[in-house]
Image 1 (cartoon, rainbow, N blue to C red):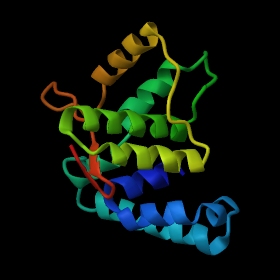
Image 2: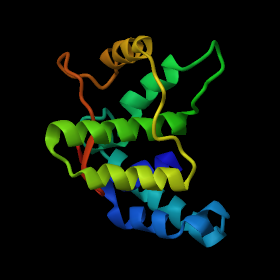
Image 3: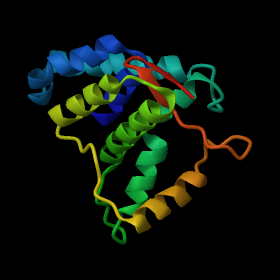
Length: 166
């Protein structure tokens, strides 16, 4: 669900609304509701990957929540046991990215509130309890992120639901 919510956040405000309004049917796995999600999400991914093999343009937006989410996943692992699964890391990463967009780009706080609301509807985490050591480890991992360009970190940020940029 985190990956589906991510797709709605970056490019489809109508899908986001659908996810919120149909939570009971989606969680109950009603076929028509789930197929609607799958079809829309596949189309979003196709739109973002077509003609962008090297993540130089629109495809890069599919990494929303991943830079910070991967760092959280990696720093909370206990040996080979993961505390947060990939989708959970992405969920927390999206919340963190939304906070960054609010703080540094002036994105409306309502975007983050709506994101947190929908993540809670699907029992996805919105925060991690961390330590100073975890912060340092996360920063180290983020600084090694594959999406860096010219030694600069690139984050995918949502300015409003359905619209994202680098």
